[in-house]
Image 1 (cartoon, one colour):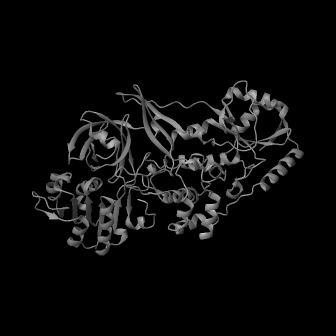
Image 2 (cartoon, helix red, strand yellow):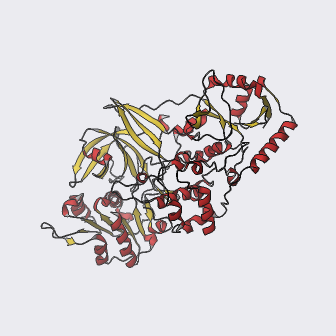
Length: 275
Length: 337
């Protein structure tokens, strides 16, 4: 049964752990012989701590990074707390990749607008890295990233230096409130998106963040003239199997673990709003 | 398909030939009938009515070990599933339910546990001569002597059972007991037809599902979801006892240094089922959960697998502690269309 068993994890080693914020750590993970599996940006994996449990996380590294998989994990529940207590060299279980991933082919030739909030940057980062590795395929890139406070921002130096230093790329950072050490923009992400007055022509907007942020970002994009087909988001759902059997992640007739987690707003408009 | 006859005088002998082969049959345990292994010297009697617990647990155990491991060691050992079994006296609705659930467990990615168990089981059905008060199988493409999913069908003709082989598995079983059987004559076939048509006449409940799968999305915000779920306790009985419900949870368990990861039945009627770690719940109340249960069976499953995920066995109606009745819900849905 082993080779064909989709519910059986393989073991992987934690190479390194980066403390991003008080609540978020990035785990760098490698299989026995390099990457545990190939994947596309936007796909997810089930991580296991034995004998604690399994939970689904988006892969935050780009598939063009061949050394390891990276997961930025916020300490929230049983499995994520347990993952936070691990150290480099320890083993975790991993299975995947799950889900559809971002439509990287359809996005070719377009300008890209990334809008991330808090830990919601994690799945976007995989796609951003992929786009930079294939820079010629994409037009102007704008990245709007917001967090509650400067201390809550993840991948800070990468965002500010590596990303901002890419050709034809702009990074727009914001935090929710004034902080003594913060000289950048202050305000919520959706408001900032409106202020920046992005134009929809030949552009795709990709957003991920807390549900409330996504809700208002969608409204802001609509006001700026973005059509539902031009707006892409990635959803979070409670999942157990990852392979369309256990039942709980359904959004109407589709399973978020198989048919998602990436949906265009046009697709979401056709589905029940149970997310 | 050939039809043979087993005189009931030979029933103990028939059972005797099968008991060494991991035979399971309905058994009264406490006040509830459920499928249980038949002991060496035991001769099960097949009675009217259906088991309270559907035989889905035979192919989809309530708790199933996915793999075992030792604490501190990461070698995961899967259970070896290899023992064949015979399920004697399964009702046609429950066999049809397995065919429906097969679609889910073989969709896109094969589920090795479920499909292996399905491969190992031979289903010997028993046609219903006395349908239950809340049976409505005939509304959904089934019937008292439906053979869908069965390997062999038995029909009670009073002093004998008519045996109809449906599949090679059924043929193999018949060949092992062939010395006890005689060819059924046309008289017996006529008797069967009469019995089945009488039985169909005894089914009093029905669902007119025409237009429901297409119509349900339009009723998303209809007030009926609030009223039909108002008395729901969220106990999950309807889903646990449903032969087509297949949702599961995955949990780790330890005992000393021994650990296992297992999956167990879950229910979309439980609050925790969809609860996010953040506290957000996409289906926060029983209204949304009831709406999902009905939509899943009569809309989403049809959309995905082209079949309604309900066989009309009536268990969810019989055993709901607050008398929520799916036939009545569907009547209201139909009315609201």
